[in-house]
Length: 296
Image (cartoon, one colour):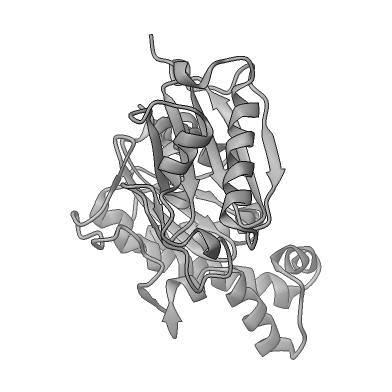
């Protein structure tokens, strides 16, 4: 029988953990543990907080009896070896050079060969969606996250793909040219703020505020339409080249999909991309389930 695993999502201000049943692909019976973490604290304080959260998520189940612990971790990070290389990123810099796997093994009193695995947070979201999301019916898919940045992960049979089918060697598209800059600038909150300022001379707090305006303001609505068209045109060749059956969208901006989805789909049609679009129903839970599935 497949043992359960703990999935965890490391953010700049918190850690979220949850026990995931790898046999049924569900969180049934588990509770979400979320703790605030000071990303500028000493390494020992950060690691202690992570370890205690994992223990709470396991509940009465001994950690040693689990399939493992998976961690969705931002970069820069050596995911294979579990070593943090945070530098000049404004968070967790006290962990620079620390072997997080070994530190957690010690704090949790686990055997040295206990499975603790790490992966990029965007990739964990994609893996989780490939197991538990509506997009799971496709064996090839692209998962994107739209928010403060532009995250992308190509998935084939639940595993991230890079360096083939024309996909960049690192598997990501954030650095690919788009518009007058790169995709990370074009398909993120930054673009909406800059575009609104360019058109109106005014500032807004974020995409949510702009979405409220779009309900009764043609200029605001037009910004979302332009975004959808540009995103559809950018993604179409990548989706076709990979022969992706599904595209799943997560992140904060995905909530505004009704404002840009039609233009995005129209761009797909015009460029011959036959990929079906899904909006994540799980969001952060997908990063948790995806990180737990690293232990399979």
